[in-house]
Length: 126
Image 1 (tube, rainbow, N blue to C red):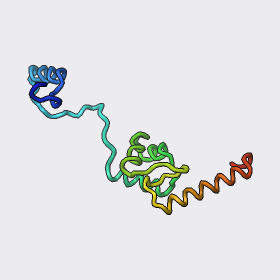
Image 2: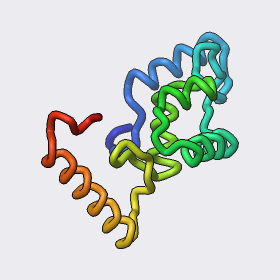
Image 3: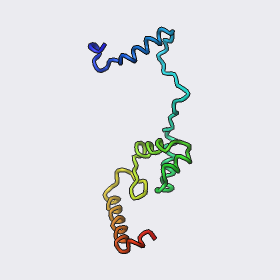
Image 4: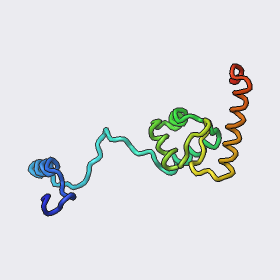
């Protein structure tokens, strides 16, 4: 098989499992869902709900979103980073692609925060 199919050939262990399955009389080619498999929660409705929560509070934590929607933190993070294309900057969720004006505003804000810090490092947090 490897000579004929090259890199597209199935693994020996996979073929061995198929043969055993066929010998048992199971000729189905469908993948049967198992009870332990996680259900996907990446629907447009969930994505919209997460986006709405972020717009309401840009400083919201993924754990808080996960608790509100009843899904895992990992799934929330995946949706935020991959589907909404956002990341956390200065403790706020922002789009990954900032325009020049938004980048300038972020730099000015960071400089002001640094000025406050250097003015009085001991009283900075208050």
